[in-house]
Image (tube, rainbow, N blue to C red):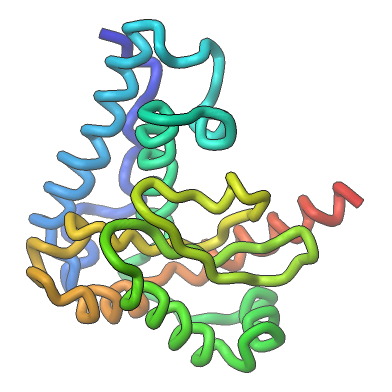
Length: 205
């Protein structure tokens, strides 16, 4: 069995989000079973010689197809998702807040549109906030292991809207889960991602 791909550590204790509505039991299933399962299955595919040698998770997201893409993207997406949350959210501020005001009118309007996209998405998938090549912030969503990097975007925030993200705590109440997620957004990490994305795009000019 290959162990080429590792399950990244959570950026917080498994009970750290409980006050925000995401229980340690959810983390046990979502991180410990689902996220870990994608890593295990990708390693099994690697042991069978089905994963390109020396390719990173991000490279697989950009270039692989079928099962290998799905597994790699789900690993990448989940890691990005965990890092998008923090036990103590300090609120939107800094450059990303100014950019959201420019694109959506206000941070509150962005949140409303992001929540609407997540609540209105049919079935499983992901909703993302990303920066495009014109340095504009855009909301995109897609099914299954959807990742905006395939469309040339640089992601800075994501919410998982697969049912396994919320069925333990909220059953079928996706709206309550979305509200909880919004209250837990790690805006410091989003700001860092935004600044890095802007610098990356500027360096490509």
